[in-house]
Image 1 (tube, rainbow, N blue to C red):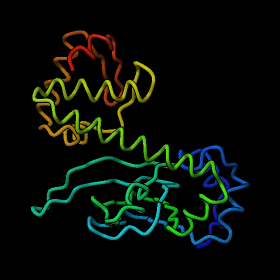
Image 2 (image 1 turned 120 degrees about the horizontal axis):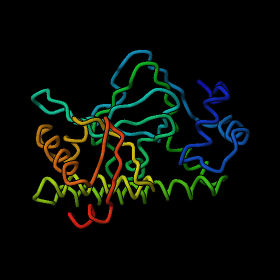
Image 3 (image 1 turned 90 degrees about the horizontal axis):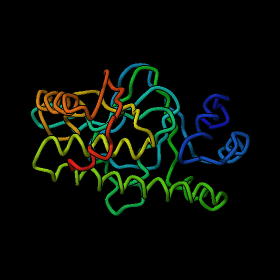
Length: 230
């Protein structure tokens, strides 16, 4: 399906995404007219790509959501993250020596994804310096996020992991009132701890007067004191 069939809302999603930030929807419509870019719609939850499968381009979520998971040999699934409209996948590995997905990706209900071939990515880089700059920035941010996760998992004390995670979200969102991108089970998996242990540590931070929270909405009451725990 050609990109010319993108709806106005989808073009706006593209334009407001990190990858295409600063490029007007009208320009995007022209850019994609002659490029190999396909739109896939998933009306029901489905496997988009399995771990080990070859990545052939960069994909961007236009509608719905995509769950990134590790599927173990036992059949157990570990949630890594969830992608929403404007988020991308494939950009970290498309130009690597080993172009294989490190995790499996599953669509949500009524999910629409724009797949941009490697060739198309290179052509956009040539005609739109903004796109190249955005891509480099996106890659840099993901490297920093990976470093943050490695640092979190290096802590022996579980409270340090939780505090480090909350402070990373605090710095990323730029406010003490943050909305977590993970539910409790996803957060526990991300931090490498059992969910009951996560609940205990969150309650402990709350009892100490450092945080307030309701579901995935958190208020960091004393960020400096929270930083001292790390």
